[in-house]
Image (cartoon, rainbow, N blue to C red; front, side, top):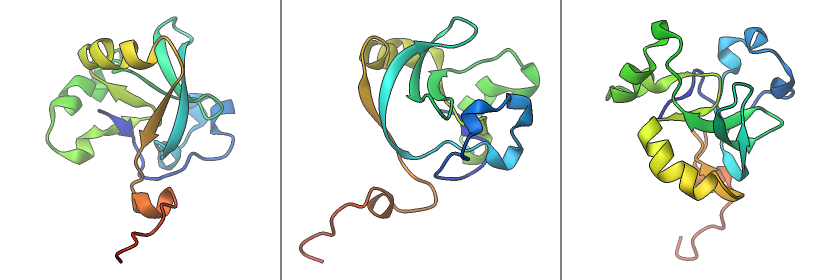
Length: 133
């Protein structure tokens, strides 16, 4: 999958109200969290799954309209840094989206977790400490 260009666990406040051309590279994060997903459609009429509508973060098929970004090449790369390109959305291969995401999340609300990068999952989600530790 492809993720936001910048590492981070949170979206910049108000980012979903800004034009993409106004979003600086360091603001292009994929937020961590527990998301109540909703099926939807983007401005181009493509089906997507909203993770955070207010922050304009969704999961969708990888887009290849900008050849300079080499998104399919990046998907195939084993180098984690090559997977950093999006404005914050989670981009997945079209076949994976059609076979797994769309049937599970494309027709009804669901719950999707995005794990944090900067904090541990235990810290981010405030899990209870293990009783044996």
